[in-house]
Image (cartoon, rainbow, N blue to C red; front, side, top):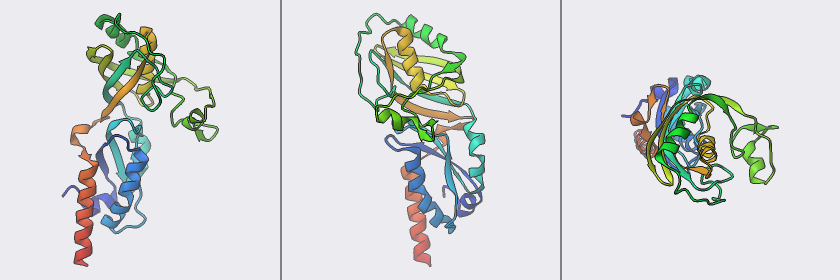
Length: 240
């Protein structure tokens, strides 16, 4: 048994490996009904701590019951990611949500230059969030303006990159691992690295591997949890 009805009803941190193309909201919407049936509590609260973009996979903490009151506490924890920055182009969203533009050559980019970029963006600094983000501007997410072609001024925010490790450089792709503070946009980091190197860059893959002391390796797949809940709820229905 993955967990008991009592654990979910009282309050649980449920670690999930969010699949690609799913929003964090999609995951909660898919689980809310089955979890309510599982516990027999139609008023069960279900939420999450720390949004992941649809084009990112990895650790998503689902909160139930009283644990939903600890969302802010969890969102404030450091994060760790692995991913790929692709050099030689830029996108409006800083990832593959929007088309790649301004293609440039990258043959002159060396391992040393990539390492220098990583060192440059290690530490505390002000980061400009992407226009395609969920940050609220006049009560609406910034991405709603961006998708309508309306330019809104984004304000830089203080963040800290504790470690920026270059795992491999396969020109034009940079495999990396980043340990960072809350509020860090890895898409912005990818864009900034491309600007620093003078060739443009965007985030082409991302996986969140750690939130505080919670690790992806301890997370369930969404399919595993859904199958468990379906079988448990069918058994409950048959026994009634």
